[in-house]
Image (cartoon, rainbow, N blue to C red):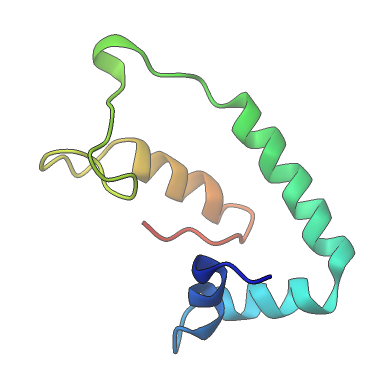
Length: 87
């Protein structure tokens, strides 16, 4: 079953994620290797508490007018290994 967000990654014209989705479609081992790597990275993320973190009102955007923050960190880390990094 394809999730709506998965479909968006594949069907948005000109999206950088189309090539990634196609590579995972053609190579299930590649998908699972990347999935494992991503889960390990997520497990190693430090939890921000107190004034260092925030509870987002929208999960895909940093609260307020801040141009830096968690979204920038995640985008930079994700793009290093060629995985999708859109926020």
